[in-house]
Length: 355
Ligand code: AFP
Image (cartoon, rainbow, N blue to C red; front, top):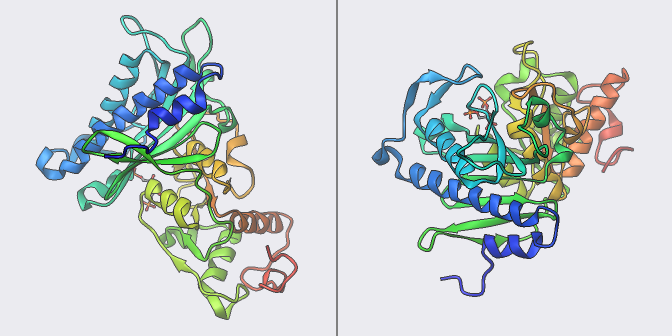
C-alpha cells in the first residue's frame, strides 16, 4: 500500500483544478493512464498473451505492424472515443486523423499518440513505450488537419509510458516533468519521481552509429570528439548507449542525464530524419524542456517547428542542455563555414566554448 503517497489523480486535481479546461484535462490524463494500464497488462503477458509477433499489415510509414502495435492503438482509440474528452485523434499507426462523432461525445482536446514506440523490441522482451501529445481542439466544429498541425509550443500536456521492469507514466502539463510508477496490485499510478531535473552535463551519448557514414559534419564532429575521449579535445571519456527504443532512451536521460541524437542524414533523401515530429519529437521535447533539458534539430528548437504534415519526420537532438547546446553550436559553425571536424582547440575543455 502507498498510504500518504500521491496518486496521479491527486496530482492532477491539485495542479489543474481552477485552470481553464483543467478538470477536463485532468480527466483526459486519467483516461491516458487507463489505456497505459491496459497496454502494460498486455505487454507483461508477452508470448503467453499471444501479443508478440508481427501482423501481415504495414502502417502508413510502410513498417510491418507488430500485434502489440495494433492492440495498443485500439486501446488508445477506444479509450479516447469513449471518454468524451477529445474531438479528434491522430495516431502514428493510422493513415489520417479522425474526428470523434456521435454516438460518442466530442471534447475540448485533440489526442496525438504513438501507441507503441520501439515495437521492434517487443519480441526481444526489451523495453517499449507509448508517447502522447495533447492539443486544444477548435471550438464548435469538427477538427480538420490544420488543427493538428500546430507547433509543439501549443501542447497543453505531453508524456510517455515506459513498459520496462516497472511501468512508468511520465507527464507534463507545463508545470515540470513528473514520473508515476504503476502499483499493479492496486492499479494506481504513484508519484515516485517528482519534478525530474536532467543534469546539465553528461558523459553519455546515444546514437545509432551504424548510420555514421550518412551523418552531417557537425554530428560527425561531436561524436568523433566523444569517442576520442581523454585523448581528444573533450579530455574525458564518454560512454555510449543504444536501446533502439526512444522512450527508454529518453527516460534514462531524465534519470541520469545524457544526450540522444537521431540526426538528419543522407541515408534516405526523402526522409529528413527518422523520428516523427507529431508523435515522438514534440511530446518528448516538452517533457525534456520541462525537466530543464534542451531539444533541437541542430538548427532550430523542435517545439517551434511548424508542422506541414501529420506524419512528418524530423532530426532530434535532446537531453542534457550543455551537450545539446554544443551540438547546436557545431551546426552553427558548420553552416557559417567554420569549425574543423574533431580538432578545433576552441572546443577543448579549456577552450573558448567550454560550457
Ligand atoms: P519502431 O517503433 O518502429 O520500432 O521505431 C522506434 C524508433 O522510432 C525509436 O524509438 C528509436 O529511437 C528508433 O526508432 C530506432 O531506430 P534504429 O532502427 O535506427 O535503431
